[in-house]
Length: 438
Image 1: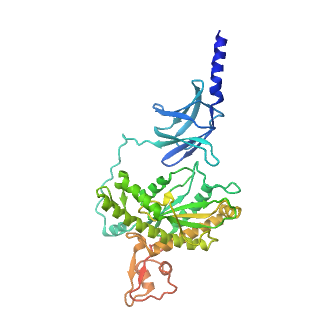
Image 2: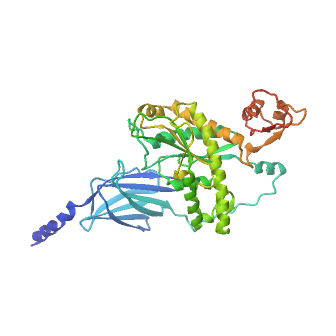
Image 3: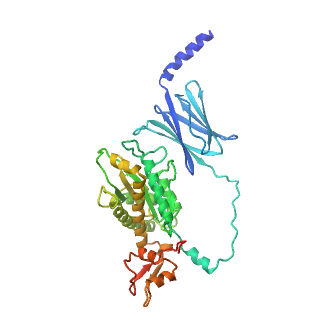
């Protein structure tokens, strides 16, 4: 009789088993502020999840799903200690994540796209400890006049955004080169060049192989009070002969749609736009302030984009001879000049080979750095080290001015594009920041 019941149970469950979705594998990417797990599936899935304390666990229940293979992922980094799984209710699957501390999970499903099939994405966010005592900074004595003068000036902040990352590899080359890898290599080279520039400071939006949302990239740049946002990519096209660099700024249509979004969302109104809060402004005034901020940012974006394109023209062929405009999401910050660079066509075998070359990556980084430097030498943000100015008076010489500000004569000439040491009365010079060698 017992054997009969087992046979009936197996017979009735066969249709469900035959139509089961399979978990093919799992991929894990720890990022500074969250960790992403992607479960690759053979089809769509229904799921639910909950957390358990003491010890901290995250439980994911998948309906009518079975495991094709053992779930293996590198858990040496990040908050996940281990991944366990087991059958549940004959046809279902339960996956348990043992975590090192309490995490806040957020999940969503993705349909097949490109080389990827169905996926279940789980983002684990760090939970702030409310009981943790905040350190109270001790009030220091009143700063000296020299210290106050030093505090008035700041570095120009360059936000460097390497496109894609994590489970988003971007475009792929003929040899399998992934866009996310080569643009991160170029971004790191640009970061090193910016660090060498007196008066400038780089901020890496992504500094590893992990995913950041497009709005998350904008948000990080704004949190770091970036003076410019540089997003680095590598283009792809079905025609393998397509080649060359392109530089993009935000289109007027993209700016208009983003302005409407900012004005509609209360969380944006409470944010800062050009140093002004929109939270206490009526709709008309908020709209005017936002329009002024966007117009200034778009003009600055176009200016720096033209300088960067000029630098890229000296490196190799450009795909478009003029700066292009598009509604790229990462360019939509209303108060940060933003530029997107397609460094080359990764779909072109010759350019794919170049993108893998360290020498070519360095050439691209130098071209970007030159364009950025030229722009900020002409239009330094107020309150920065680059904004120091000196108007030539009668009897003054370039060497005397260099000595007055403790900077090399060569630096003074370079930053002002002077071909000789000759200066004229009334001429305005930009004073470069002091270096450790000055």
